Image (cartoon, rainbow, N blue to C red; front, side, top):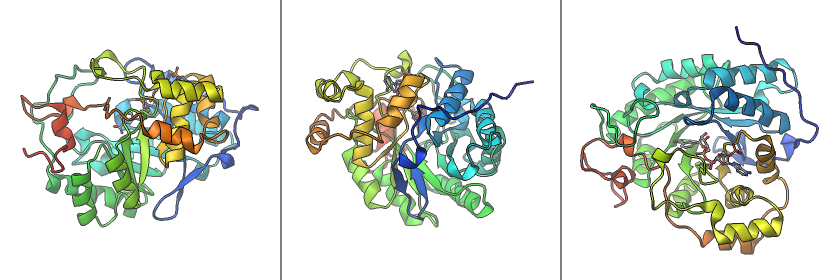
Length: 345
Ligand SMILES: NC(=O)c1ccc[n+]([C@@H]2O[C@H](COP(=O)([O-])OP(=O)(O)OC[C@H]3O[C@@H](n4cnc5c(N)ncnc54)[C@H](OP(=O)(O)O)[C@@H]3O)[C@@H](O)[C@H]2O)c1
């Protein structure tokens, strides 16, 4: 039997009402920074669940979860602890989860499982984690391929999206959205959706700014949620290539950090929020968790600093998604429709 952790508010935390919110198309307001919860294979589920509790204690109210992270049940214990304390009400929380690639044909069941694990009656946001139904064993090598891997097939994606729309009708989720999409895929979805995506979760950090997709999403009234906002410095070796660059070592970021007296990671967060994204940094170190939240409530970057960071993009995608390729001989770029059209089967 697990003992439920105790929850108290931290005296050195930030008042959540001071955290800027992002307005969604339907009028809901999402806290403009969330805590990422993907521990990959190097942070234990218990450690991530403890970080969720610590983050709530210092003022986070937005949490980015996913079934495939494998830790929703333990994070659910953290949510139960904060709600049972009476110090946080459910409506003050913003909880996102995501349907994994193995459940595109059984979205309602997958959503109900996440709700049961997280101990919640509804999700604020439910995302289609990847637009491919391709999956692979946890912690596998990036060269692994599932035998029945498929390309993006819009008709199939719409079958999944209809199930997502149904979740809203059922009251199981308040908003639905996408993740790891491209402009050609979003164009088709916006053409055919009855409920358009409220948010699109996408990789965003100074060395990977995705300006065209970012502008497209914003113009469509979709809120961009930025993942790996610090440049995912602790990602496992299998997710690294020799070409990858390191945002927090960029001289422009380091110089701005020095001027503000903060860690370069904090500059990445300030830039993300100043740009209009909702970053979801992951941290299990209390000092960093708090610094990232303070990053959005105090001492914003100047216009000149924002412009300087806008100029250091390197088009360096870190989460390349190789395991989702569907046939031999492909390059990871084939997942991302770089020619402006959906990569053919
Ligand atoms: N939709 C998707 O497909 C997708 C893909 C990837 C990620 N995500 C989401 O995005 C979240 C964040 O991405 P990520 O975990 O890849 O990368 P990230 O947030 O860019 O980087 C996390 C790393 O940065 C360090 N860090 C954070 N704040 C810091 C600070 N102020 N000072 C120094 N170091 C700091 C953390 O170390 P400490 O723990 O020691 O602070 C941690 O190792 C994930 O957890 C997940 O929720 C979604």
